[in-house]
Length: 253
Ligand SMILES: [Zn+2]
Image 1 (cartoon, helix red, strand yellow):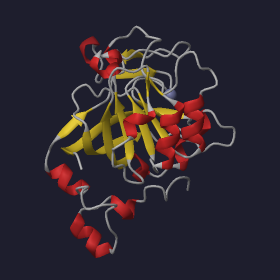
Image 2 (tube, protein in one colour):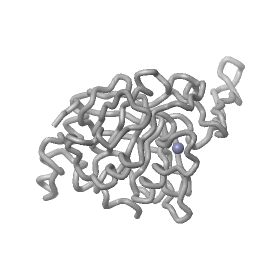
Image 3 (cartoon, protein in one colour):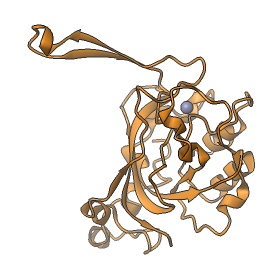
């Protein structure tokens, strides 16, 4: 199965006691277990509201049609959803841009439940490579960039803005060499709008680094968390919306 080894469940999923039983270890003791993080009941929703989030030009807009309603004499409410697979907060898989790239259903659920590092970056058009200097990234971690996109609330503005903060190709290269399993950003593309060659998508997806786009990190402090971002189980999908949450207290180490 694609990418299963990159951030293996047995490696990091359980709490420390369970890990002792399984004979496996956390990447570093400074990352608290998921079980502990869930017990803390600290949870931040970093998903954008689907009906408000901006649509990338050319993508299908979201719509919700009511086929039946309790207020209209029916015995149930029933709706039909229509949306592009890159709507709101979503994951891009390698098959999005690579002919032989793996689609969504090649990935096991543990790829979507992972330790994550939130890095804040200000005053830039594209996240520079320097944003990753002096940051202790663990192999297999997700790296999420909080930029001025979040400070401006861009994922809560339905009007598409072409001057969003993207990720620079050198920063993407460094994410790959640091062993990131997923890279996230707080607008609907990691690439600059004008750049149709999609260099950042290519760098990340060719190296089996999943891309989480359309995050709202406005309420999140930099630091370490657990990220849960499960997509729907859709065969051969190249992308899918997710409900993304950060769990646990921010750990800076
Ligand atoms: Zn996308």
